[in-house]
Length: 390
Image (tube, rainbow, N blue to C red):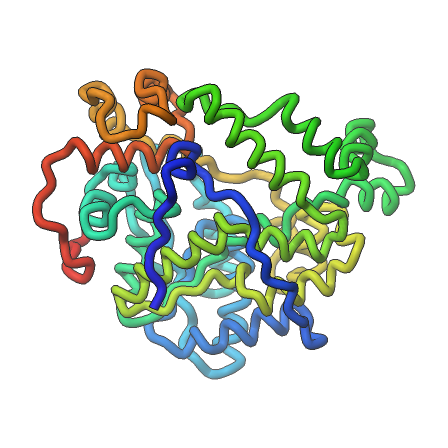
């Protein structure tokens, strides 16, 4: 049985799990991505209820459409879309896209969970989970926990991993240039040159403009930047192998491990369909060396028969920053004395300023939970099965 993954001190400070698993790319067995996805879904659709996390984005829409098609073909109950809605955060609104997909599929049953500030990293859903399990990776498991809770005894399917498997690869700018006969924006040529550069040059280029974590000590920043650069330099030019690398990242694998452990405690079969090795292997085989010219071209090539073009080709995406860090975070930060974090790695004052800002950095979430656990009087740890809905 899996157990939640707990980050080490440096991973917690930086808010990321670096590196890749060494697993080789499995064989695709001559199966198309659609066939591989259908095969995976069939097993889970036999559980009741079988819920599909449905935001209205491309990945969740494709997953819901594929699951619906398989269920109807096999004579199984339709999957039930489950949606989180944030009425006070307009940037998250996907209702128009959701309605278009549901009408296209003819689905009428649906579960909608309304979210106010419950998904704050130290809010009423996270608090009992932190007491029961401690700080986990990923730290923002509360939205998934709410859906798992609704699916007790059944299955929950999510489109996690779709951005990585179907998204841009290192070779994409070159593929776009060649397939467009050079009719691309000048920036694509620069991107192509960077993609073709050897690992040492790509690593050096990243280190000239790294992702900054202003809450960590300067020497820690250097270590984390080097790890970031190593991950980028490791990326393959081969589109198919690149898809597998994304799926084999430790951050993705360890996150899947954690949510499966939580699901087991709730008697839920949990599936990240687009992270399953069989599906990724089939996508890698279909992509080959060159892959596709972008995310939209990939979705059309693999799932063009499932949804209207307008859904597969959409370019917008919901933003959830303000739905996560709420006044609960700011209230804690205002009274926090700096205890509970490793001050050899982290600057407490810089961390507090981050939490009090309009847009706190997502990678500080684990530190927030660590500080909250260490400085808040805790009741007896909850039994995960008895955690009540907020």
